[in-house]
Amino acid sequence: MSSSLVALVLIGAISVALEEITNKHLVRKLGNEFAQIALVNFLTVAWIPAIVFVIIPGINKLGIVSLEAKLILNVGWPAFWFAMIVAILNIVIRFLDFKSYLDDMSKIAPIKGVTIIFLVPVGYFYLNEKLEPLGIIGLAIIAMGVWLLGFKDLKFRTLISGVLSPLASLWRCRETRYALLAAFIASFALVNEKRAVMSVADEIAAAFSIVFLYKFALAFMALTITPFYARIKNKPVRLSWGNFKFIWIVGMFSAVQQICFFSAYQLTEAAYAGSFKRLWVVFGVIFGWLFFKEKKIIQRLFISLVIFLGVFIAYYYGK
Image (cartoon, rainbow, N blue to C red):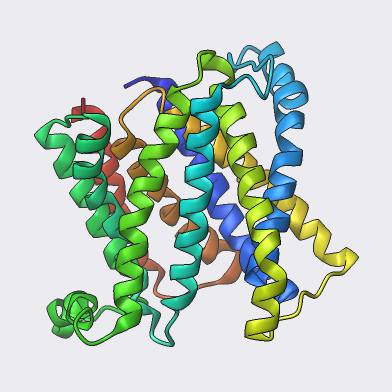
């Protein structure tokens, strides 16, 4: 694995963390989750030409990065259909996420880390990717760290019962099962992202092309769903000029992180690229402490070190 992968992962993870922070404010302001998905993804599509033709050429002049994309839509039909599959899977995941919302999110949030575990067999059967044993151990450590960070409050006396509570709730809580199904489908979405990127002949333009198609399709699907969701859930869309500054910001971070991680698929296996993306939660903890004065920071920083350890092992000892 190369230093280029390290740069892509770090820039992508920081961008995801910043995207999530601004997204929280945007959802509250818009009042409709699917409207937020549609607007952010349309703005992500709008940012891609700026990144391709303005930002990246400017960086290249400084000799920092060597990335260039001549044509955004330099794709064939296989890549197009893979991008559509990824968009559909992400819409399904969003539906399941909404259905899995609970007042006690400590039963739901940890399960998102299970996607990393699912990626190992799904990547093997779907992409024939064989990982080194130490690489799998690294992924397991990342998954454990993401699982632990999902809990707002862990006490030593109730550590075991608290950590295992999401598993226990699988049998009696339908929302937890929705979250597990979403994590499973997310692993298929990630491997299809890699198949989409690898199916583009022009390696340089691949990530930009697929992100453009995938985000446009996702935005269009979400926009179609928005009026029905607003009517059924009584969640009208609250648009204002003030909201657009958040939409532009979220769209920019979304474009940067998507391009980074889609480019990473060309440098490593889907299981590693998808797992390294979870590094964003570490930066989310740091930004939450710096900007929002979140509590229990020592506990969460310690768990973040566990995720860093997993990434380190997977990076240096993975295939």
